[in-house]
Length: 538
Image (cartoon, rainbow, N blue to C red; front, side, top):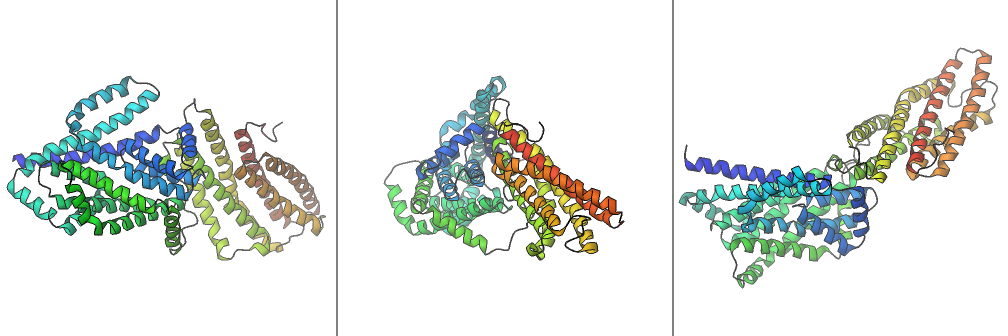
């Protein structure tokens, strides 16, 4: 086989190792993100300047904007960061991402095998925070080794005059090279890989100067495709940030295109190698884009919300907050699960009202909610089982982890009863007795009180979990005890009457009692989170 075949294999292997290194940096950095770090980030990103600085620094350290963007979305989901703040973080991440190009443009890539060996030894010998830091450095070394192989493969290929002429021919047309960079970034889902290939070609002297800005702009806009694809999964904040990122980079690209001639003249004043020109060109575009929108991030958010509002309503049962990419940060994953569980309790409460209170009947929504409750319960349950336990040293995160998983078991039981025995029982009772069934020796006022007490107790339990309110938890437990006494009286009355049709009522009462008990278990789980006594178990 020819030497060009082996050089091509080396080139493709270098690109693959470079992409794998980017992925490993992201994963290792997420695993090192603790609950304390989350709280520190929340405090640090309250101002616009600090939010942008956070995005830039995190993107530079993590060798890409993926980590900072996903963490910004998660913090917005749990209320620790506004959507406007997450957009500012995204702007900073775009600037910080240029550090990847700077790193691969330096000659230190020749020392990457040594860097990889040292970092691997540190991973094997390190403990605690040192081991986590070594894993991040080791993943960066994979990225650099990939760049090293890429250069080893491309240099001999470009020695071939036909290959060099082909590259020069493609890169001499601004529109052609722009769309090539856009398509390459969209396909590889990484602008860093396209910039790495560009630096390698430039180092071989096969890249004309007028091709630099079109390549950088194409990669800049092409990086939005990966964000839009990742944001299409259903989470509202992720979709808003995805659309905002696209609008941000599209507007920045369109506004910079007329300035390219003056920008090229400006860079011509500096004597620099082509690799340095690529880095400086990318920084110039990123800072230009950020400078335009930094004063008005809320405009991007408003425009994104408007665009999404024109789309069809999302599936009711689709998760809004759950993010599989953040499972490696248990402290954030637990917060997101808690938010999704609160959304589920709202569905259940709405459905109970529709079935028990005629004035609350929801028409088509009432028919859609059972399936939505089932699907969302399944999603929450699977996510809860996928969250790894936080480190024992992180007591706050560990308490939240245990509490939410305990509450999820109880909520799963409430959900199953709601769409199963409760829905069936309510329909059977309504078919036989109508909306207000007879209750033995109890008068209409007492029957109405019993129905109202059931709804109030369920509502107090759900809201106690949502708000972490111990007073509401006490009200729910008091209501549960009172409901149990009233249903005991009703059961005794129905048994004395001896009417066979009353069996349906007895079954329905038992179903309601099961729901009350399961909902109160959620309250007890929330009491554990506050370090209080477990209500009802004195």
